Length: 68
Image (cartoon, rainbow, N blue to C red; front, side, top):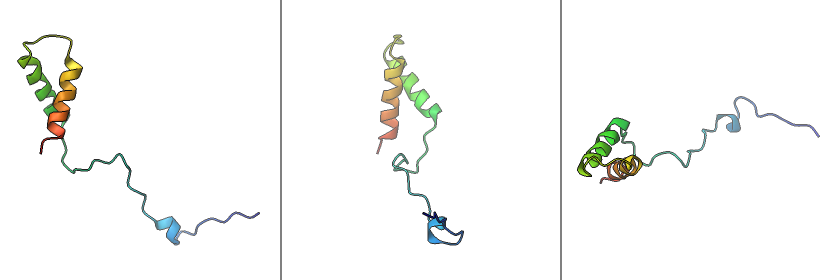
């Protein structure tokens, strides 16, 4: 059986790639520094208690990314 290739000018060769499901829905860009500042603020509000850096970061992300 003979395989054929798409010609350079054919529709198959010029079809744009499908959009990724991982692409953000919004065009707003949030800097890591903005999340870091908010996470640090949460840390200070908790009385500078150690051991919750990840929770502070994730909460800061949620607050910033889902503000509306």
